[in-house]
Image (cartoon, rainbow, N blue to C red; front, top):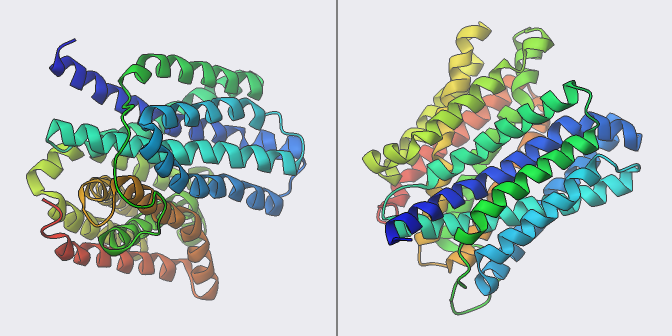
Length: 380
């Protein structure tokens, strides 16, 4: 195989790596009502059990960074994929809250470890290519999410038992991995110093920005339908439209994102993205008619789409910390925004209103845009 073909195969294999956790998580989503009934959970208990997935992810990320430095991306990604494949069918079989929580924790650990290792792989592939590629890689996480949700929904609608539907998803993951594994990096990441450390300096700054952007994405996931239903009076059956518009806009923006980053540069991409996302939240909250307000959801998706990929690229190329520590550290802070963000929105909304909570997110995203000035010198 020529070097050019080898590089192209590595890029395709990296896209597949991003597809896998997006696919796996979205396979779990349609199973949730079945798992809730099987484990005998009420809504409050389900909320607590679901925290196990996020806890597993957050704990696994820094450990995955340390393991990747010593074992290489391939071994960690293979181990992560194995955890996801083993636990997906078990999620449909768990018959008690404790059993479901334990399986979700292991499943979340697999997803979190994969997320960390695949971003380390992506940084190396992007660096070797000498051009922006991170947005395109992240787009395939979204595409995997769409494919997994669509496939599972179709299978469950056809009365396929959840455990067999999940087993089918595992077969698809294994088939995709068989084509990709040979092109995942197996080289160790050499660096001096400890393999685990709290992010500091420029990496901590990147992690805070990631926290805000992931908080905004989590707000769309957990609160957009509630906002349309309770604030705008949209029928609950149609209230999911806002998230659909957001998700599609983000996916399309990421597919086109590498060209945008090449033209604007990383600093301006963060600046423009933060402004667009802030404007989107303002539009959602200010425009009373819900259909025109959907433009706001699209702007949030377009604005947020390429900020996080840029932040991962910056974390992989800065010199304040080794990349095997920087990327897990930034990932952990960022994904904490997904977990804590919706809860913060709920607290603020309870104390004031959901409109005010969304306005607070808009202000935070405007702060991300302003922070782009401190990326100068690191971003190009």
